[in-house]
Length: 372
Length: 222
Image (cartoon, rainbow over all chains, first blue to last red; front, top):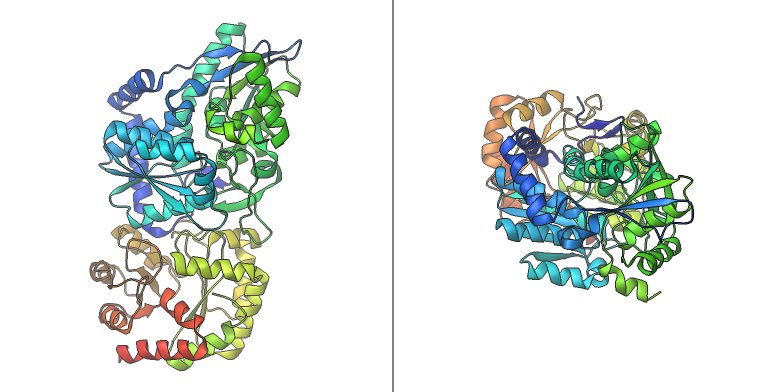
């Protein structure tokens, strides 16, 4: 019996050592989401600590003539990105499960900072695995994590980026599974993680739907979000999945297009669409944006692609940089390079009203942008 | 790990007293492996050991030695090659069975393979794995990844005791068994022992070093 499937995708492809922990997590999650006390505590933290609801802003000067572009401002969340929605919820879950040590991976450092932040808030020990190359590229976030009390472990294998950091975080979890909670950062990994992350990020989509209705008097024609692992996209899409008139569009980095040019493969505990060769060996991804620089994607996205409910397109580094500069100049907002991919494709999309997930702010990317 | 030297190394291991040879088919992202096997997999892939080359290596090795050969790999390779085709191709190339490190007993139950259980496994999962396993049950001695350790894991003894109550299949212990002393202690408990990273380190010194190492393990067992 296979568990945790989205069509043919998902599953639990991990060493046996982790299976009892995944079953404990599944039970713990099911109990938590049915517990009014847990939901009230999460809701309260999202308001007081994270700063929710985030606004839905209209980018009138950014939008081309004849088009309306609305921005879901996750960049205004505490720590500057949507990652904190998931980190807060999973940290509460870690506490319920009696785990005092939290391990996580990070690429650009946004999930690492969010995790270090909630661990500081809840008094949990925090260990972040990060590729040595990403530590070099994202120095300010490494310093932030350390100031927040996290231990940052450099990963020296392979490409020294997010793929290896994720593998190393899972190995850490295998070795310390009895005391440690693995706080995964995206809607990837073995069941039940894709479902947990989706549900914790769905707050983005549910807020956005109500706000769009208020701003427009109807639903938007299209909803656009960037996709690396795909957590902000799946959270935003979650609010609109049942609205068949609303197009859902995920934007991948051209050099990391797991959905546009990947194949079915197994990576980090689940079966999904992955950049892999004919033997199933995982290929390297390449993107200016460290958060999209990942060869896999959440299994639910692969399923949404196959069923046709969502469309997936790509944007180049140059298109993302141009959109970054345009949003800064026209709206006074520095977006992260990840949602700059979504902004780039929102501009040329054939839809009158477009809602874009602005998943994070761009301060972390200044050095990368100024170097171009 | 599969490579150009594998047939010679397998023959040396058998000469040293090995009863069964596990051959790694390398994967780029091996979650169950510590640094030694990870580096070996990286080297093998850099040398072109894709699935077709590994099958050829298995075939040539089976022509050299008479002991059972068991490929050990990850689900990604089977997913890419086709689950059933992979199973029949390794059998045609001389494999006795198969180990898939990231495929717990409840995933793909139709694939005959040696199942693994760990100190964290519940009794229900040990019983399930034992019922579905192909010949013997692989006991992961410790909560962690592969690699040499200073001491034999204290978790092995209670794991063996639990497994004995639940099944009659032979129990082979592996992960962290690195020295003749570990081998002797593990063999007091289990029916067989599996040595990976330490054997790989010996193999890097050449076939005769591997033969001496395996002979030292074998001597410790008798």
